[in-house]
Length: 255
Image (cartoon, rainbow, N blue to C red; front, top):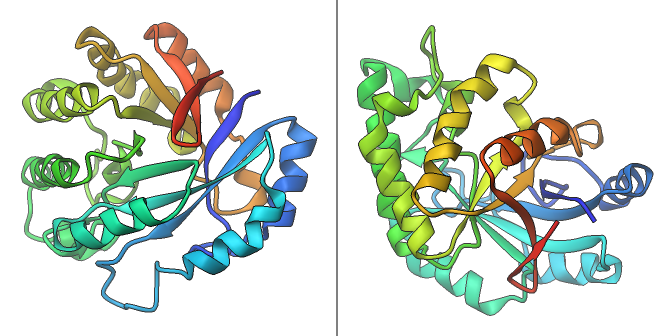
């Protein structure tokens, strides 16, 4: 079965999607899904982007099946690395995503992160932070949306070009390959050909360095986004000779 491995439900602060609605869409599309709600312990408002994990399992366990699995997206941060590790060890997630949302203590969604910073400087810090955080979160199953910063960066051209950041991107890729961490193809921005064109060199480099496993996730926060642009993601995987997988019981299952 094909899986959308990155779906946010109402346990995520930025989503109101009911699990029942997500499962209904999953059934209609004949698509497996993994709920991966947000835990970002370094979010400034401490009541946001955290949730009661016991309640999460209590509510969602009844739906667990071959087509619905329970995961989490952990916002990687050195500041809370011990706490994040404890979360990873304390719960029987099927799948744990590692992601970067904060750089230098600022949510890179915020325009303030880009003020008085040239693009090169901002993106270097983004990749440097990613490298540091991976070293304290080496247990994650997949590295999420390497192009997350491109969604929000306040520059005329927000795209990542491999050749401009090759040294840092290679360090990221080497680490995840060495630790057998999968590399996500996030489908959220795959509706534009130029974005796909710019991402392919990164995935080809991942393959050339010895990587093979990719997860595919829509990063959906509503029912309409579940499964979006999956075809494009599989085409990227095919062009780069990569193997799409999803995770069950923390082990990769080939699609």
